[in-house]
Length: 282
Length: 282
Image (cartoon, rainbow over all chains, first blue to last red; front, top):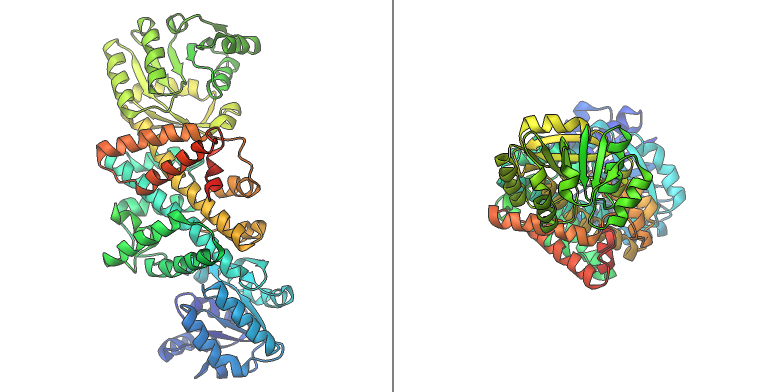
C-alpha cells in the first residue's frame, strides 16, 4: 500500500520504519530535512520536500507531530493532495476539538480522518507494541487498521471523531494522580527508612499494584529520571484534558493539582525528565 | 500448634477458621461473645471468656482488631498470660508507634511481637490469599511464618518493629491518590460520553494500568459501592499515615487532600461504602 508519514520524531521515526519493513511504499516528510535523510538512509522508502508531495497518491496519510498548531500547519500543507478515498490518520496527541474540525474538513474533500493517539511511548514505537485509540468512522477504521498493525499491539475503535483524543485524555488523567500517589508512597518509605525492595515485594500483588509501581518505583527511589515520557509532553496532554474538562464541566481536582506540580518540575529545570520526577518536589 | 486468635471481625473470623482447618488448636476470643459462639459452631476450636484465658498456653497469640485503643485494651488484658517464648502477631492496621511500644513491652516479658498488617481485604481473608507485611525480629518472623501460611499467599519480613505498619501505610498512600485519579478518569469519560468498555480495552494494557482500574473502573461507572474496603477504615489508615508523615517530615499533599475527599464521602453518609466511592463527589 502507498502511504505517507508526516513527522519523524521519536515516535514517528520508528513507526514509519515498521510500515516500510512490512512492505508498504512509504514516503516520509519531516520539517527538519536531515531527519528525513537519516530515515531514508536506514529504510526502504523516499523523502518528500513538502507534505503535499508526500501525500500525493497515498492511500493513507499518517501524521505524528507535536501539538495542535503543528498538526494544523502540516495537514493544511498536505490538504491539496488529499482527496477522494484517502484516509488521514493522526497519531499526534492533540485536542478533541481539532480532531472534530479536521474530520469535517477532510470529509468535505471526500477523505476520511481518524484521531488516533497512541500510548506505549518510545519503547512501544520501537518494538512495534503501541496501543492506538481511534476516533472516527468505522469504515475508515477498518480500512486503516491493517496498516497500523505494523507498529501496534492493540488498536481500538473507541467511538466517533474526537473519541480517540478523549480516550487518551482519560489515560493521562489516570496516570497523573497515580504517579503522584506513588511518589508520595516512595518518599514516605524513604523518610521512614524502609527497605523499598521488601515494600515492593509486600504490596505489588495487591490493591496498590500498578504498571507505574512495577516500572517506576525503583527508578524513583534511585533518582533516575533521564528516560521515559517527558514532563513537557505530559503538561501538553494535561492542558488538553483540563481544557476539555472546562468545557464538559468535568471536575478534575487532583489532575489540576498534579499539573501544577509538573509546572514546579519544569521551573526546577526538569521539563525533559520522565513524569516520575514528581518525587523530586517532595 | 496451640494458638489464640483475638478478634473475629470480617478479617479475623475467616483467618482463625483457616488456622483451625490446618489442624491448629485454636482458642478464640471476641468482645461480642455471640460472634465467638458463631465461630465455634462453624469450626473445630473453643472460645474463651477473656483474652488472658484465650492466650494461656498458646505458642502464638494472633490479634486482628480495629484501631490502636482496641489493640491496647485487648493485649493489656491478654498480657498476664503472655510470657517466655510466646509470639504475639498483631494483624490490625495500627500505628507504628504502638507497634514499637508493644514490641518493647513483650520483649521485657520474654515474648516476641510482630506488627503484621494485611492486605487483600475480606475476599483475601476468606480465600486464604492475604498479603502480610511484618515488622519485628527475624527469628520471631521465621517461627510465626508457617502458621500464617494458613491464610496468606505472600508473607514478607519488611524490617524491624514498626516496619510492617509503615509498609501498610505506603500501601494506603499509593491507593488513595490512585483511586482519586481513576475516579477523575471515569468521571471525565462519562461527561465526555465515551464508551467505558472501549476505553478500558484501549488503556488497560499500558502505563495507566492498575489493580484498581481492572477491579473498580466498571463498578465506579455503574455506581456500585456496597462492597469492598470501607471509607471509614481507609480514613483510619490515612490518619496513621499522615500522623507518621508529620513526625518523619514526609510531604503527602495528595494523600492529605484525598483524605479530606473521604471526609466528604463520610459527610454524605458514605462511610461504609467502598473506597472507590470517591467518584460520588465528582
